[in-house]
Image (cartoon, rainbow, N blue to C red; front, side, top):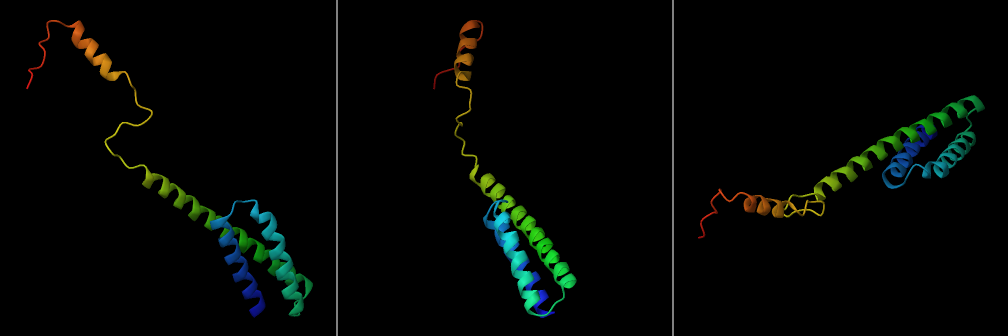
Amino acid sequence: MFVALTALAASALLGLAVGLLFRVWANVVVAPIIAFGSATALAADGFRFAEGVLITVACLVASQAAYLAGAFLAFRSDVTDALADDVPDDQPGEAREHGIGNQHEQERGEHPSRPSPPET
């Protein structure tokens, strides 16, 4: 029973690490390693075929669930970092409208009845 619990824990930790560090395509490599490793360990420990298959499937499910948790945590971390980089600094951005100041000056010039501001 210790081998089964160890296989489940190792699968979950491996899935979490893959979710935090790699993309989904890493599961193509990791899932067969988990399946083969857990099946080999369970067969060596004397588990029967049906029990080994059930525990191996449980290891794969645990790995995938941990991968999703790791990917979610990595995504939240990326979003938090992106939001932290966007700090207001009272400077106009690159996407600003360049002609607004000229429009105001032209509007002032078109209305001669409006007095100009006093010079200080």
